[in-house]
Length: 145
Length: 145
Length: 145
Length: 145
Image (cartoon, rainbow over the protein chains, first blue to last red):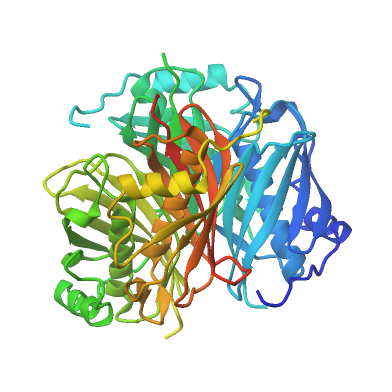
């Protein structure tokens, strides 16, 4: 990437696009908000809901997977513009600490934007905490325009 | 594993344990059933619900992650017996094909059961189909008894 | 993959192709032999050499990575025919047991052969042993013909 | 990690430890130098050698795996002090760009240092280049002292 990557969508545009096309994403039980778009990074917030808890009072793996996956998707969209059919081809996630019942932030950074594949890393944190709760890397297939 | 791995829980016992301790797992929107326990392998069925769909009519990544994660958890439990606090430390998933709106099966096989870590692989299929829809590997931390 | 995957190269052809194009692969310190091609699976043998050892008398991670990577490469080649520039885009490996100083076998199976990406899994064993020493999944980019 | 992680070994000490215990690591064909230790991050340089090339003039996957693995190992050692038997339990690597024939740098950062497991991420670059050539995450098992 000798040329800098420039976002083609603002946080507002991204949020509206996600809501329009993923009506099920935001429900009584899960809510994702695009907080910031910054070059090749995007930050999302996942609002806490009791349904996300698993025994031990920690947020479930699938809820964290969803945050990582949607954060990555938003970061790809921000760079390539709104395209519906970008799909995750793989995602690797390491669970590092147990997040308590609180909102979580997902920050996705694109490491490579190729013509056909985008690769990124995603850090997950509890709101107000410094340490990572989980760390993921993901690959997205980018369809021809 | 020179000694064969022997399941300590039946499909019924596993199902009851999961329902007792993960009351949120089975709801109007998701339902997981333990179909079979076979040595070091366990097969789960995830009943289809409209909320699992994403644009394009395919089942969402988080729903498939949940199936992979719970299948692996069930396979670990089957071998070590009911222990609440086993936790996923990492999960790597490759999405291979787009599953249509149908029940999905997750078949988890334990590759290694150590004192502290279990490693397994999980194949996901749509009911009635031969080909894998997704393939995952996962690591679980096993707490001291 | 409704249509079965049929190998386009024999074990001999694969071995010759790898030797011709990767002259550095087989040296005094490493030797890879294609033992079998079977539909969408390929088995390679990595001959043992002292240089592969790390402290504790076990075969090094990089040597096992090489075996996994080359086995996967061979399995892709067997299906798509000889193309030089297929490249690994990602590889995830779990180390399960410590392999002693002996030849190792790598068995790669293609899980999906798409137009642009191939995904496979690879099991590594010590010769004469049943249990897996390591397990990997890998993604290969397939160039346009 | 509420308490900051403090390195217990300098770059020199790390380099000496690695040379003493991995005599095969540095040979005519591969040379690894610890360049810097900085809190929870460690940077290594892998000197270029023709044997690392694969067709197309790019550095081989196994050579990059070795750099990622050794960088992670050094970062764990820097924090826990010299212990021989820490072993990689898993490593996930994404290959992003093709590195030309030049020295490469591996920068490993520990994301979590638990009692039994360390998790880190590793960025690989060609000397003098900004962009990542590969990105890895790895898990190390830490033996009891």
